[in-house]
Image (cartoon, rainbow, N blue to C red; front, side):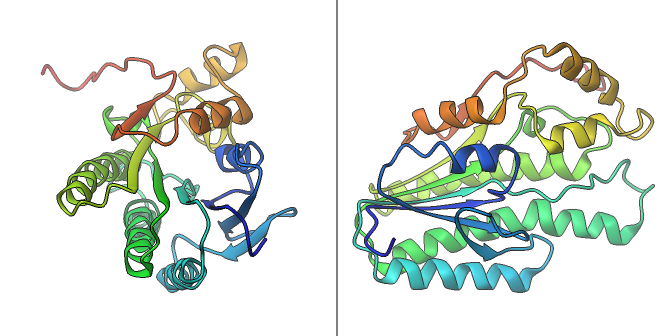
Length: 252
């Protein structure tokens, strides 16, 4: 769709929330591009491996080349992809696994978000440009066994807050940036962590029970429709179905 009115990139559009987002896009005339290690069976795909910085450069080049000739109404990038294989307790897992988790789930999302913004700014695109960074309640709740995941999401949300201020400082009103905490969504990642041993992830049994009862759990399509309906946004953080979590290790 070379003459599409909307240009939408979604990382990790082959499963989970990314899949839901890809099949619930509210724009009739949209070119949708999956960024993933796996090709999407129905939409255009560009290879992305969060753990391999070389692939980040490939994605950045694609942002640049595609935006260079784009004359449509909007360009949106949703950074949704996450590398499965959460690390367990710090100091107890193989150092190479911990390092890979940091690269893929802390460094890559911010690097890709910045690459998109840079491509938008350098291209001179004057339509609506939006960046959605998928976050989690883990950004504010310290879950044992998820030190990298929690730290990465907290850093991502602060990055969004700072970048929004920077864009406003430069008068780039056509560019919006937001982070999204989607709530409890039944995805492969959710079930992956729920299946972990309680010794390595103490809240796993709670998650398993919640999934079994269907308690406050959204399917990926419902979650996706809620997210799309809230965009564009003038807020730095969108919250959906978030439950209050208690920090058991702190008195403050």
